[in-house]
Length: 285
Length: 354
Figure 1: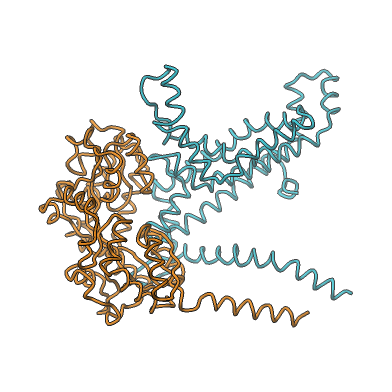
Figure 2 (figure 1 turned 180 degrees about the vertical axis):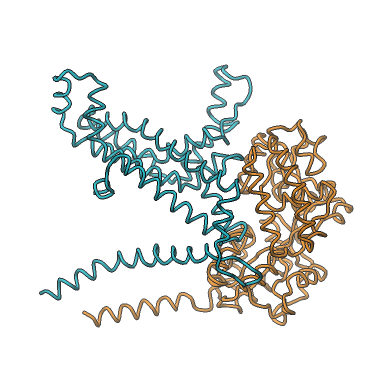
């Protein structure tokens, strides 16, 4: 009986171990080793920290690195600001059928792939696109307006892409908030703002933190949206990794960039958890 | 219970080896180089099956590098991308010229490609499709302004220009600025100097650019909708757009169009060389080559295929390339290692510049 239980345990654990080991741990170790070498000549490599030195001293790489981080944080904040009222309405105000319909409406855009959604935005925003034509038709603009290929367009794309991942955890946590607690808050003389600050936000904190972490990671690691909507000025860090690996065939520097991104995202997530006084266990469990 | 597991595993392993047996030709190529019609004819005639993967130069090399030359049986990088990657990563294997029918090729093109792809006395590439890159222009709006790459920076075209942020742009601008980057290939210091000049020009020119295009279809949309009136692109793109709008066409720049030749190479861990040689000899037959030309839009190195090419395409070619423009084509020599690092730095800085 005991040995049976152990076989069961091993069998259940095997897929996880294989998944983590083969697809995550081993490739990362290999990547780390690649990032720690320097090309001397054809097929000759030496171990060195040159790649990290290059990545940290070249102003361009550093600028892109910080730009990506700041823009991702900004995208996360905007997503939270937009998603919170939406989630609150779905969880607390809407009832029965309406609640399900609204939730479905949030979900439907995600039935199509990210590429198609991004193309949708391109059709709307481009110079000969829908919004530009509409503005001219109404008379608000006398010539085609270009709304694509700038940071704002990119931000719109990023927020839209990650909206669902903020709404879902928020709805889940807000649904568990007892209405009577909110009522009690008002009974005790609170107004809308203080109830929001003292009762609703503290209760929704696990949802806010986990939503923010997911959205931040998605934005930071996004490749498609910045490249397609951002245009000529919007160098995203993932695009630089792709460029080093594929276009320049410089795997060493690309691997170093990859590790910098990994460290950056880990540090920021750790910082957010520290700031909000939560542990990863509470947030994810 | 254990027995069943063992049998299943054995079957699975057998199944896997079966799938990789020698009759499948895994072809890594460009869009349009292996049209369905040609693949069907080949499969019917030889019994081999063909799996086509579409890609581009950088991705082909990255894919082969990642697997050490495995996963494909035949690939088609440009001729300037054969020697460097072979010396660096050893991802190709030598071509046995006795298995290739040399009479099917245009002799001068075969000779040039073989010379450009020879490493340590072994030949690694034979030519397939060739073409040029230059300017695709809406002649009604930008025809008077744009004669060369540097004219894309003319203030009259502000916000109506698009080009790629890749090495052909650097090379093109260098030629248009009166430099000869190909002559400086062997001299890293001199090349760096030229690239710095180009970087200054491209940074200054950035305000003119609407966006840097990355895929052929993206550019076609931009030009077709009129959002872009002058761009740097391949000849075929210009000719295709010409069918929809007679004002748009490909123009060979005054400093010379840049000529490329896509080759056939054998990845070092390719498993069905026989099928690969059969494919090369099959598609180089004039009738088949003409079919590929009509789909891809570019001419091939097949001798005598011109006879079978469509008249419309020939006419467009002749309109874009008068004899002196043909003589002025700058063919890419093999890229020495190290230069791409210089170019990469320039491209990154231009993209990040404000």
